[in-house]
Image (cartoon, rainbow, N blue to C red):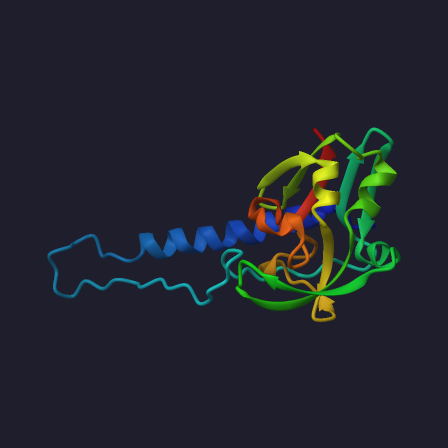
Length: 194
């Protein structure tokens, strides 16, 4: 059975639900119900990571050939696996990543290479949506002229989900779009005409 971006989203949603459920259970079990009792114990829940993208959730990486991004526009719908993205002739780009506040090297392709085949060009308003439903909209030309890249590797390895993977929008340091932090959509699920 061929995996789809829907199955990837489902795996991420299930993993997120497990983390939320565990946190709720820990909170419910933190008190004996008798607050005056000296023998009462409380559970202390602490975050084990300082991840700027959210809590560290173990999610299996996409399977070979599994769709990780859907692009929908006037010229049609396209889905892409990591292997298909690599076929676009990627380049390595070292940037100052604004969320982790350090220099990182990504393997990326120009976002324009994915927008144009679906007819998302010029003043066409597009919406980018992440796995957690965060969305950011702007014109195709704003992304292209701003230097937007679609990254799929960090330091030569697939980007883990808890670090904004498997694909994310980045901007080269100094590019005009780099200062618009809202446009840096990570764990990207889809791009579509608005």
